[in-house]
Length: 72
View (cartoon, rainbow, N blue to C red):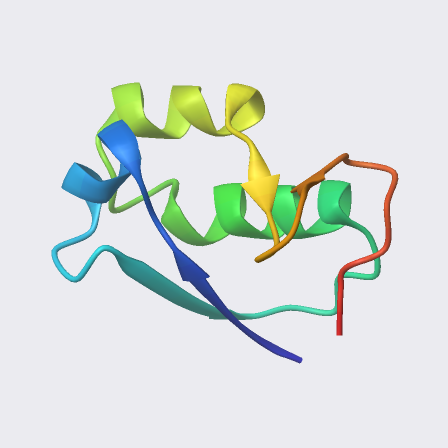
């Protein structure tokens, strides 16, 4: 599945377009977070990668917890 993730705050500076598109088979937000970390580990500064475990993922309506399913 393809995910298009909009970036905010300090992570916005790590990606020139402030968006990240990745292909992953993530069913939960935690799995998606792990896929994002793997996708950017080699190209983002270490400081930006270190922020990912502490960054919020959100839909248009709510903050999403790691155990929640990825919204459609």
